[in-house]
Length: 73
Ligand SMILES: [Zn+2]
Image (tube, rainbow, N blue to C red; front, top):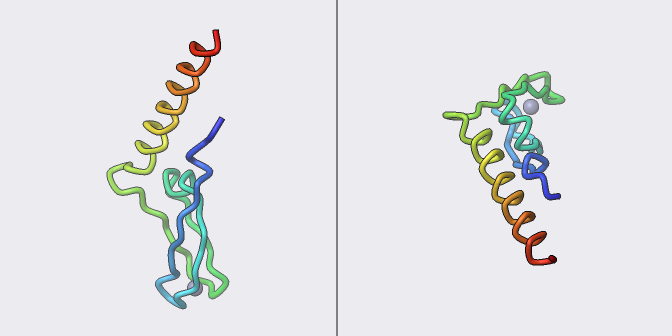
């Protein structure tokens, strides 16, 4: 099964502009990642949109999976 929370997004360090790759799950959990320059970057899930998206999309995949199961009968 596809898990959307493993999808990644890119963001840049506000201090040194180094590019970082974080998973949607890390954003949904509002983790803080540490840049090699020493800057801590607090991930912000605005209005819990990432969390909601993960939930909604995972649900869609599950529905799809169930639909395929029915077809296979
Ligand atoms: Zn940095």
